Length: 437
Picture: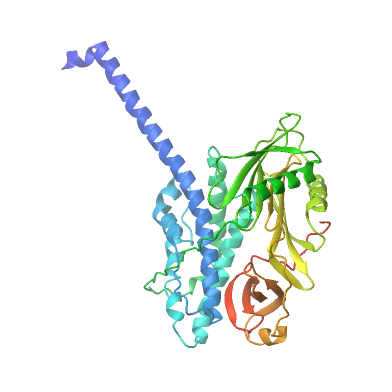
């Protein structure tokens, strides 16, 4: 045996085998770590979305609204982070603190049981407001960390170190929040979750827009924007709901190339840039100016710009989108919307027009219920705004915006009957304005 181990060839073979095993173990560990980096960042983003959804449910129960709906609180991603927590702490070198993902998920167990009560007790209300408040703190901490690091929520391979930093900074903030006396005192009880079944069946309708009308609309829009007649080519991707085209130019130059979709039923238009040559980066003011030029060409005078969204990548401005809605007198018309999106090179990257053929332009009826009667039905929260809206089904509605813990929710009432239709998180703040647009 001693002779065997003294044999140089044998020792070389053993050395090679040990090296191969070591490399495989190292690669396995690297792949495992990379998986943790990727899954943790994605799970963190989705866990925050779960907190936002839970706060919407809490709001409805606290206000004793929409209680006929079978709510189900989803904590799948929160629980995934709880399962991974020990491995995450080891790989990320995080010291265990007051915050715990599992404890966070436990706090939601008693909430659904409350919805079946005819009246909430003061203790119930305090519990709901407390959970809502701390959810909001965790949500705010997450977005602050993203903003401080000039990051968005899109995962990109190769940026694992940045995602590690995001998670560690979020946990640091979460530990501070979890140490607050009010948070520690929140009750924890188990509940049985109920599933809701939604009817997703859609009605099929015959085409309203012909192929020739779709081609003419595509030609008209491109010609308006670029002052040049395009060559429109039918795309084989055309399906049951849309006509699909792409364009070329008569001079044959490879420029301003778009894919265009036209809805067969409603004539809605959506187009996106097929390719973009890297040119000089344009400033935000420059993008605003170019967006105004397109707005002046395509957006009618009775539209207002209510939202401007900026998207960053590694701290650099990538895109800006501008959203418009038609406003007739004091009524916002959801069947008439336009969105313009500019990329950092100053090019139109996306355009969406809900009704370019103006099929849905009809007179809007007067409300039968006055605003004060609707607001008087709400006895909790701070009403911040009330607007009239016609939705895509031509139904006239009041949208009442109300705050809880400085977070805005929207009540929707039928403006003809005064009956409440829905309650949800505020995401359509049509009353806001984008300056200089």
